[in-house]
Image 1 (cartoon, rainbow, N blue to C red):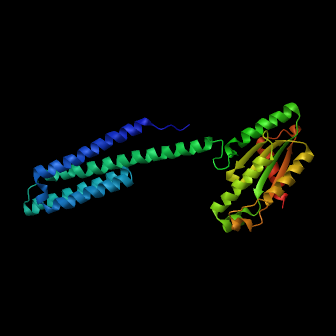
Image 2: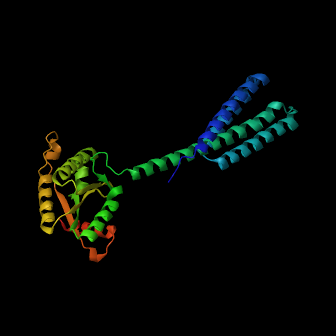
Image 3: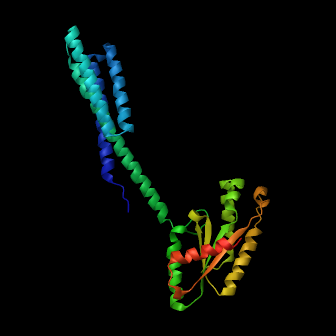
Length: 286
């Protein structure tokens, strides 16, 4: 299980304080050394800002390369001025040779911490989604509960010898339907189908929506004739859904494919194999 590392938050707070202190120090040095009187200082401030951007959006290695290039070029230029034109090397030179790498590397570290925090937050959100057992739009059990529920019912079959069926329901020509209606109207159609499934089947039957596979699943205890009857009635009721407030969907001939598989304990198959058996039957329901 992914946990949010609180030490990252503490480090981000410390880096924020340090960055604020560095900018305050930059302002104080500017004022004390009267660097604003030198036009070159404005250009050097610009290089500081470039360094912060490079550091924040790349990594420590890139910020180090930027810092090394700046120090080498800036120091070489100052040595040239000192040798060729007798320009003395003042304290501001040492200040900029320290300030640019410091800002660049600090922002690189800050950016790394932010990216780590974002990655862990994304992992937590993904894990939370995977743990959600109820689909928020339809109220049916989600795909995360499917194999667990299926295994429980398979155990019931083995223990009490009660006929167990898995029924898979899928919108016919779903890709074409989505292209015609769009995602929003397709989801509206799915919600209405879920209402039919919920109202028609018994409370003890497990009704699920498998979002990843774009299908519904029903785990039910019934005899062979009962399962066939449910399949036909379900297809009929879904086909006759009346979307009163949406003529576009109403004009579409809504059909579903239904696959049914019976579980036989002597086959000793896994929940996944049982699911694939129902899926094969679904493919033949054309």
